[in-house]
Length: 437
Image (cartoon, rainbow, N blue to C red; front, side, top):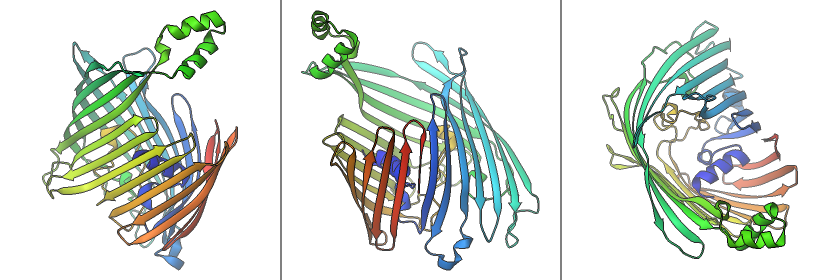
């Protein structure tokens, strides 16, 4: 479990992503989620405890609740069209301020066109409808006396890409082949400039900036083809061929099911130029590496280099080492000069819902996280963790456990830090969803 997996794990287990540790706002979250083959549903309620406000906690904006329905990119029946859908309902509530409900519906349609023998052109278009209901007005700083607001936006994107690869024979005892795939991509994204001054302004979704971006990226992927272990092959053969003589034939004759295919390395680099920007039109040059040499070792790394400041805006690295099934040791280091950068949280480049970080008064992130998970029994796992924030020289220690039943999982963690003491609980009902606080 490298940095990306650690961040996803923290978001799932603790109800916060890794970059929330050094924030002055702590999140208490109740979460219920369910996934199907074609879409997923997530519902949560967030209560933010601002340690800087103290007795003035009523001035903190809460999310009670938030519901998201997401359908990833998929083919529309037997037609040549593909589509995805991002839908979100959120209720912002401030005891001494405003109360606003927002519904955001954003479908997108794709039409990939193959240009033999190498190129693919993929035009796509999205239509975004956003509606606000200001059921409670902040008299001290009201956006408007109106109760209802709406915004309609369209966007268009044209992507040109190709895929080419080459396979290399290794012919080791288990490793047979390695496939190197390269995907260069060039894209243009357009979002019109619309007047949004009179709309509520709570988070970055309330202001969609115009874009005329030309972007390029290059993705390299290494995929291994390995012969599975003999005991695994035998188990697979027994499931399909119970007879002893037939089993012997199945083991001696290699079939496609006797091989495992795994992405060992994935490296993506890229940058964009925004024609709608007169000042600093070039984005930071980014790179992202995922490296999994074995099933027990994983490495994630991400960098963003600012071409104008000639320095790194962001660099993250995570390393995970596993032994037995439930034993794992992970290290993560993260530096982010501006974690709330709107340019980084671009939904229009990823065509998917972006989960915004928890509001924070701090801009810089610079810390180290270590975590150790030990499977004491088949069902009981011990968790220990340590965080060191280099920005404010604070430390946090954590200890907890996981109990894994056949139908549910119970996870809990107690953490003690320089400025914070907390206790988290999460219950996952397998096949249904999860909730925690």
